[in-house]
Length: 286
Image 1: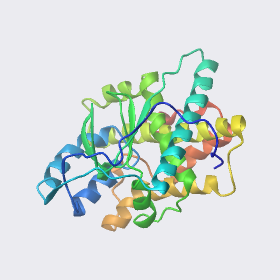
Image 2: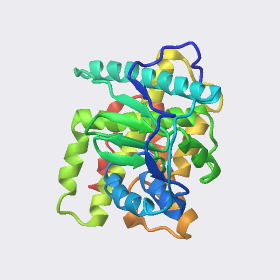
Image 3: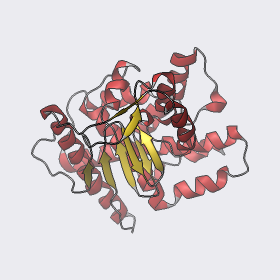
């Protein structure tokens, strides 16, 4: 992705290297489970995180100390700020086209652990969006996990895709979609509630593709292989791919984010169509 020298967002809070107090180290299998549950920031999945983190916190603990960022880490932060700026420009345009006003979210970069209005979280939670404070939270080390543990292709546009996905959850908050889904989930069986969660996540993937479409038209930033990087990331974190890798079989009723095929399909639909009206992922669960 072509990004150097372009506008960076002012809505960035870089907390990397800042002391976070006592946190468990070497989170082991529980830490991995948290990462898998929350991959790409599903709001419903966040409900399970505090329980697992409490178990994780029973392990060895250490004091964190502030550390200076490396040049590579600084550059990664600048890239994230540029992508965030692009999401601001694109969603402002889309909202204006539909007679609405876009409210920009903030993005927090952190290392190891972070406090949010949705509770505390560790790096094992993966990237996520907190609707209570309307902020996207990211430990950028997640992308090394995505590549090394789950076989994603890597590359800068994989990061751009994830940021765009999380901003998609912010869009759902602004449009009232997230609150409607939470209401619909009340009183439903776990399997039916999970289907609604899948639809919410797939719509965020669609919005990531839609952002890519608009951003390319506005800024001509895509380079060869960028779309493949995004699709590789989407493929790696499909519920079926994760369950197959972790437990050797899949349980569709437990899916909360969608299959690899679904995630790639909805991203592609948003990217190729550029039409927000095609993003009704909830038709599949009715």
